Image (cartoon, rainbow, N blue to C red; front, side):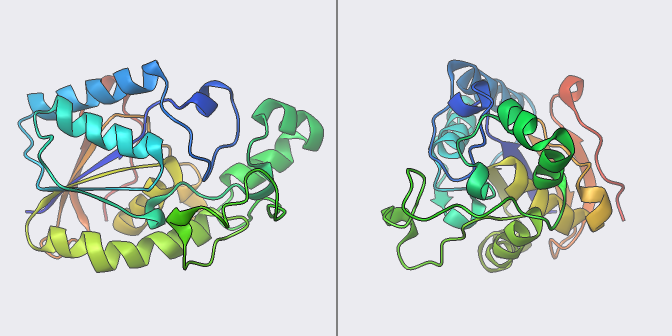
Length: 238
């Protein structure tokens, strides 16, 4: 059966500073690296042999994927990087302190921006310090100025169907090291989670989620976090 390992990146510098990060390319903290090393040790202890890895084009996810592979003794495994696995774009919230933003706009409004399925934050104004138009990673694509989980799913799903899914359908064990929202998009698709329920799904950092999939990789047969002590509730299998 195909096996999928989902791993959210460890603590980043802006996680530590409580800032909205999105597409900004910040690095892991020492704690974030240690979290990834623990995740890799769990993969090794379970004897999981990974065939191919996928990640975003953001350093914190790339380093998490590389660390998971290295620590599990599988640094030789090929890794594919693609912007469609990026974190959701936080629009005009990018770079802002979350607590200060809540104080300015109210907790209720910030919760809607952060957790609703289809209501994005205000758009990012062009020309500022977080304008990605000149970043060569994104040449030739229509860069969003904000995203909801819904629009994040709309870019993740085609990549899943064109690149990740076929690897799984061929029987591969696939690691996806990415971000909270791009991984939630995959979870929504595989577990067939409703729009109302997906807002309550949280994926812990660097705790590999191991999924055994159906032969066509369209559904989940079993699911478990490798670190049971840090597991979060999973959607019901359907």
